[in-house]
Length: 378
Ligand code: A3P
Ligand code: MG
Ligand code: MG
Image (cartoon, rainbow, N blue to C red; front, side, top):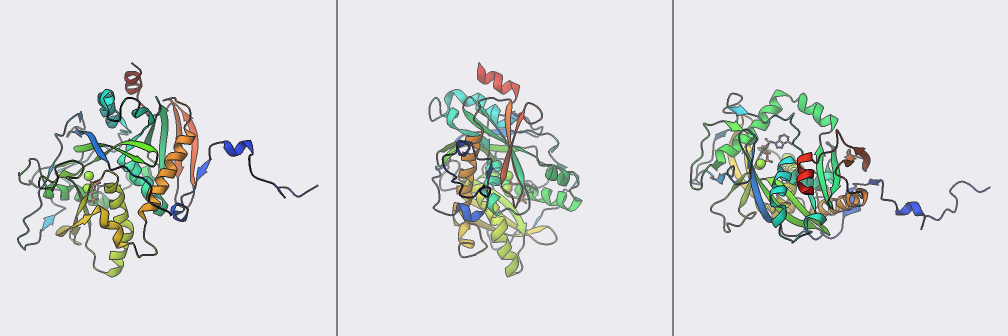
């Protein structure tokens, strides 16, 4: 007999028509032209209050209020108030898509795009899409995304990996303080009212959030996603969201060319992915010294971030990020065929491996709540 596999022609076999069972993530596979990405438009917003309660309005929106630029540099003590004026959100509560679904339910009858638009869309958090964008370059943290189809719409909801959970539960005190410092910076840079002043004497409560709900499209995938917005610039050239929004970030002061290079390669990629998706044009960075004081500010334009790595062989490429994301969305669309809110496909990824998928039913992975499914079925 012949050797196994010798002369085998791999075309037109029926199993070639089954959905792919895994998706590679190597950057080289996703080079090529930048895919179509519709200019994101804001459909609406919602707020979460100090008790993490949902409100269908902008009550939690804060106003960009940078320190006067009179030659003096800022001197923000990011450790001030820690831990006594820190009210951290309870991270044990898995909110999944709930707050976003609340908004969708409230607005489903009057979504732009006309009747049927939602049925062809993907609904998710901006943060989940950010993780997809950075996947081809990520070497540390894997992810899991649960997917269900319901009334045509594909819903994507992140699942905390066992490794991420273990890290969160054993987070060293220094990392906990570092998390606080990121939020403390927001307090130094934002006022509660337009034209108001900042008040760093208050508490930092990370339950509070303002979320923008956006519509876009990547390739042929219509998107409805929501992302937390740090503040609005009342002085922005245009008052139309999301163009008037500002993202705030902290980072370690850079003291050497090596530190700069690593900042452009790792951090700027994450900052770009997070702000490009919702169309937030500017990221204001506060650089902190080893004592935890922000002594300098710098505005990075989202659309110019790629310039810092354009000529870097080990840099990132926006086309790769977006092409991979589009490929993942197609992979998910082709995998999740059955329309059933109790059926869940779990997409899992670890650095160095392709994305794999497994099938589940009901608890613990089903994530579309009964209140949502029932109200949408009315
Ligand atoms: P910095 O990123 O400025 O340090 P965001 O920048 O997305 O508005 O998030 C505000 C802050 O939340 C961050 O500030 C950081 O302190 C904390 N944070 C956000 N994502 C985090 C993550 N994945 N791990 C740890 N802290 C995070
Ligand atoms: Mg934020
Ligand atoms: Mg921020």
